[in-house]
Length: 290
Image (tube, rainbow, N blue to C red; front, side):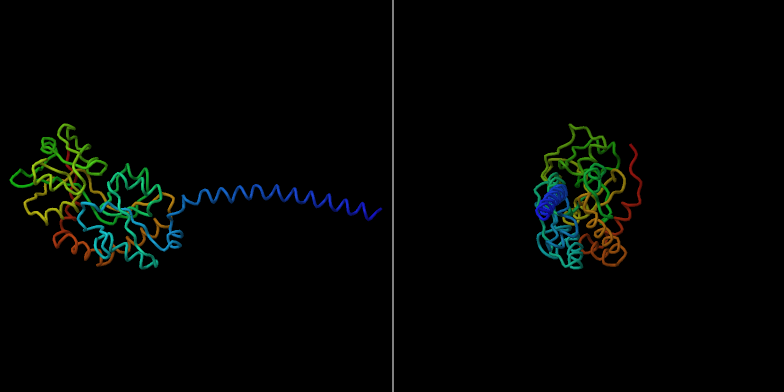
């Protein structure tokens, strides 16, 4: 009888233990499911990139000159920098082409790529959505016209022009901030074709990043650089705010690269021997007063 009672007590204890284990396992299972559900949010950070073996670079390539990013390995200022970063971390580089500039940040947030590169300007509006690495290339917006049209030297003159720009770009933001009347703005220009719009007379002036203007003038000597518009700015790589490891690794790499002769060599290679001096001027001059 005592033996039967002991067995019954043991079974009751076992049932209690199982119930306790179930109570512990349920929260643990919920925690595991929560972590798994959150995993896509971390999908682009450096450990995941290394696990995948590929760094996916979002860029607008269509109708763009290849000074920054191209689909051809070893071609482009940003591409060469990122290929060297990939070699350091034993990664392959994949360019994920986007059709329009306005598509880049949504594509990054939807985890279609790990970073944005290629003439990507740091702006306050973009900083609200994503994080940026340390400066990759100094920039500043400048007015571009074509002979025999006048060189635009003031904001007042710019407001009198028929100004071409591209929707969803930092250039469009600068044109609006400069006070150009909407009736004087043509924002239907296809990305990468603003100098063409000057050449065929659709517009009389455009506002470009200095890096774009230098490249365009090398291809067409009839183009004229005019006034700087707004303060100096920066081109950098954009990453998701939560991808802190990737952000830190890229920023450290770029900062160290800027201290070496390699950075100047790349500037001259892609933008010409006069580019360093033009960039210093753009960085040093004060923005125009209204």
